[in-house]
Image (cartoon, rainbow, N blue to C red; front, side, top):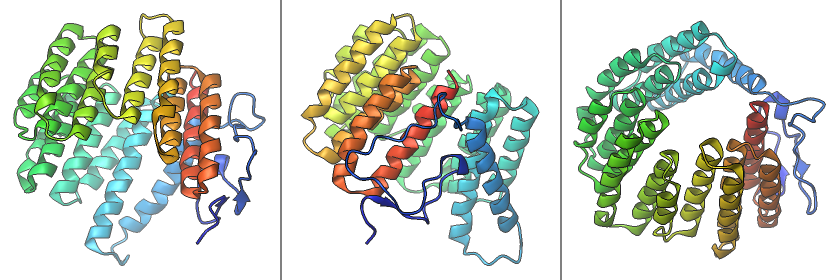
Length: 365
């Protein structure tokens, strides 16, 4: 078994943020935060995406080599991973790459999706449509989602079908097809997924500044929650609704919604999401900071340390998204102290990925 405090050589990350082989993380070691504006070798989103693109080309060469031995299932899963990379790059590179570059990535992703079995192709098309909508090609996204919807009958398991319909409905809302999104949500029989779909639709409408429509939809979502049989799923739905309310400018209503969330970690995630909405909306930054403090105060109510460090990591990411980079690093450092005490190197790697994300958000400031 690997030492719980070392990062093995086989675990690779992009070159700009590589963790040396057998790097130990002894108690008291400060959190590595070199990848910020103050660093001599700053981490940039471009560096990360360029590394991803290079890996992607290598994988594509293997995938499209007819002589390459592979099992069908592994092939499909690797193809979907490939699509996910294209999707992520197309969305995140829009800040510094040309529109033509993004369109090329989407086209290549669709070519890959056509090689997948129907259930995986459905997931891939939804991701591709999100990428198209993300670069402003809403009509193209709507066409892609219609292709995806035609594949729904290929999914026979009722629960998985409900999840895919939920994903499809939210993607339609993001593609500015509110009517189609509501129609798709109406097809969902699972109440948990229906509530999540409505919350996702409301969130998309709030992000598009369709405030009144968003309010009406998440009220419908909230009314469904008590009918969901499991408390965990009820909490998930309430968390989504609370963030949607906050993004719609209904901060007080959002806070009220979080008070009915019984799971501390999900309540923390919801409150942190509200703080981000405050920081980017009309509320003053001081209010956002107070909301983050409220979220952090709840961490001590979590019984297990392995969940406390995850809650702190969630808060750190949301603080970074709100532009509070210094506070995010401080919170991530608190999470690292707990993580190191757990002697779980996988958790350390996840937290380092969180730090890289904070660094990339810092670059975008």
